[in-house]
Length: 132
Image (tube, rainbow, N blue to C red; front, side, top):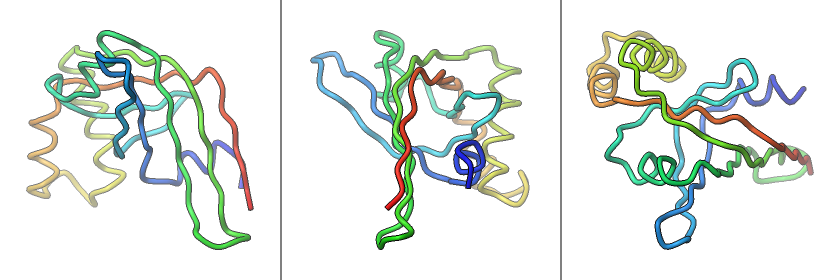
């Protein structure tokens, strides 16, 4: 499987940001990979959003498998920014959520759509992949 296909096919990205004390903060997030960028919906009150607002450096990991030869993954570093424009946030949030829900009529999908007030846009600077 090629790298872009792998990134588009997976469902969980582990996102690491840098907290105010300089310590890493890592969380699993839903995401969308499009045009060589990652998009993550969140709320500006979350720790990851607050961290990115102060320090745009991030790292991430996407991986699958627990037994060889099916252990595959990618890690990377990059820069993140917050997209706050409401119409763009809503449009991207719906695209992200539709990767996880069959449609937007689902109650949980609607709740997440309304709670999301920003999108984290990650531009990777370096990606390393592995397979065992």
